[in-house]
Image 1 (spheres, rainbow, N blue to C red):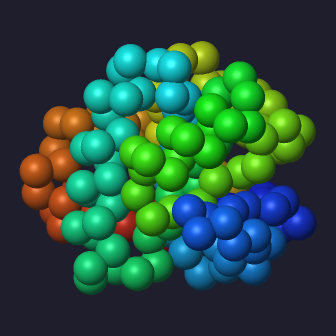
Image 2: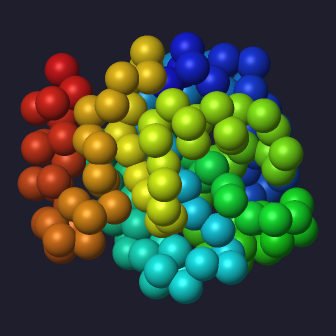
Length: 149
């Protein structure tokens, strides 16, 4: 993932901007495709946030990148800042968003993929896995890492 997002500007909830390649180097990355206008997204985001916070306690190498389907920058930022975890987002309007949607064949949202540094998919439907197995975050994390190696 670090290779795939090298040179892409990512921002966090504090407004800090980082280079995707540098920031994601050495991390296990989840791409989270979502939007504030999407009711299923609004239902899943708190579950992802809880899962993320639990995993980060013992696995600081986990990172989520929000790939927004919002229709305006202010909508993206409001949804990101008010509802999401302490992760990063791709800036509104960045052409990388469309590339990622196509590359990972994202047809509906919310959708989440766990990705290797080179962009290969480790977990195709992380959203469903978090919903179904997220009550035991550590076991699900270990399951993902078995495919990650």
